[in-house]
Image 1: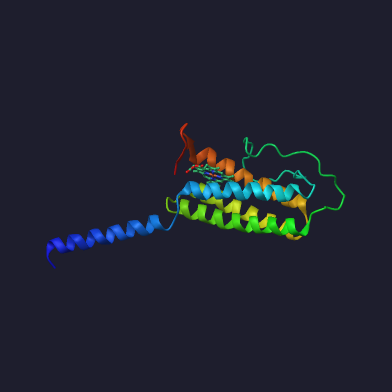
Image 2: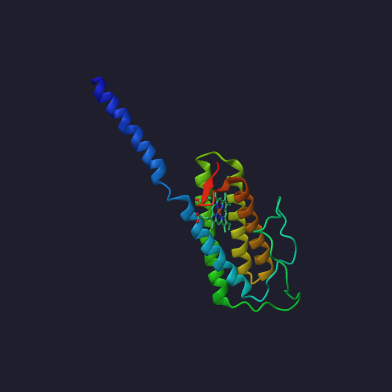
Length: 173
Ligand code: HEC
């Protein structure tokens, strides 16, 4: 093999490797936009149960950012939840979609081996799983608590890995 051909082959191989790495994933902010829409939609389904607050602190690490705040309110203990089956189904669907989106998020950070970000994305998947289980079990209080637990991960990851530039956001691996 002549030298030029060898170099060309190597270049093509490198290019293919690079394109597969990048082609595997859509732009990160599109994942985030999807997450935001689905997460807001899910919240509506949970609030439609009439139980608007997590009964107990959701637990988990850290916490205390502006995105996690704002829970609190009514949610009379004892009264049977008035949670429409169709709305619960929609909550289960949104939670399942979020699980997929946070898996996509986890894979994104996996390429940088950014372990804390991968863990935030993993905890968010667990939270979404719990929301789905609680919606199936007609337990809006648990669903709201799990929702708050997901939300903590938004705040924690943004705090560490998102940089506001005034014109948009930067990713900080
Ligand atoms: C594992 C880290 C991580 C988690 C978890 C996470 N985000 Fe993000 N998010 C980021 C980073 C980094 C950016 C900045 C990159 C960008 O905007 O392209 C961002 C950007 C965003 C944006 C701005 C997108 C744009 O450019 O318009 C929204 C909205 C958003 N996130 C919502 C959420 C919500 C809601 C949650 C939780 C339900 C969440 N994110 C969870 C890392 C995360």
